[in-house]
Structures are given as structure tokens and as C-alpha cells.
Image (tube, rainbow, N blue to C red; front, top):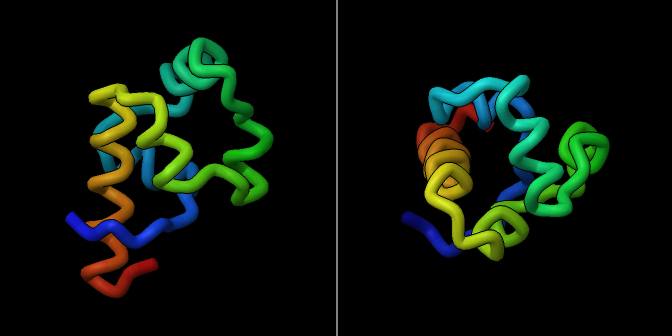
Length: 71
């Protein structure tokens, strides 16, 4: 995938096949804020820094969307 840093949006979680309900505890576990997600302050770099496979799924979904021109 691209090294381009993108803003993660809530719908990227859905595009990755995940749910917001499950994302809430995941965000808390990684000291990330759902409010920051909604405000556009979470980036692919932020998620990548967690080293988590679920984060990578969301990152990949965001990059696929950007490549498809749907962002």
C-alpha cells in the first residue's frame, strides 16, 4: 500500500469489516479517542503506531478507498 498519510474516518472501520461498537474498547486500550476519530484527528500514521493487525485492516481500507477515488 501507499505510504501516504490519510485521515481515518469512522466509515473506514466499517470498510475494514469491523464495527464501531468493537472499536470503542480497542481505541481505549490504545489510548486513542473516539472523539478524535470523529473530529478527523486520527491518521493512518496514528493507527500504524499501534502495531496492531486490526489497525492495519483499517489503514488498508482507507488506502483502497483513496486509490479508488472515493475519499
